[in-house]
View 1 (cartoon, rainbow, N blue to C red):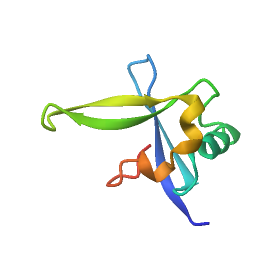
View 2: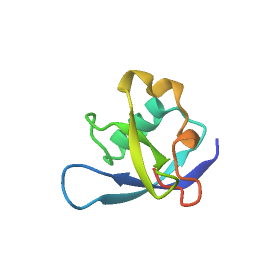
View 3: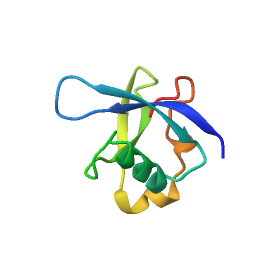
View 4: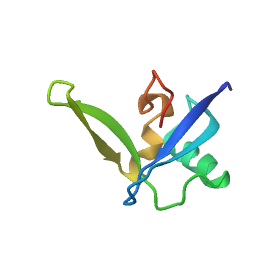
Amino acid sequence: MKEYNIIVNVIDDLPSQTLKFVRLNLEDNLLKIRQELEKKEVIGNSWLFSKKYSENNDTGYGFAEIAFNQEEFFLLNEIIEENSNTL
């Protein structure tokens, strides 16, 4: 199991974003990643994962939430931004 340095970007209703630097396995599913991040006190159990997507011919972007009951079907490497290893 190889772990990589990942930046976790926590976005909430506050105007600022919180960045956390953690080591995670890119091949783990999101349910296991959630357990690791909760253990490391990076996120709480009410947080949801999301996938960033392009819109308007790549001039903007949005986020699609991943339902909690679907986390076991997605791997971390499917939702991180590869060029910056940002979750």
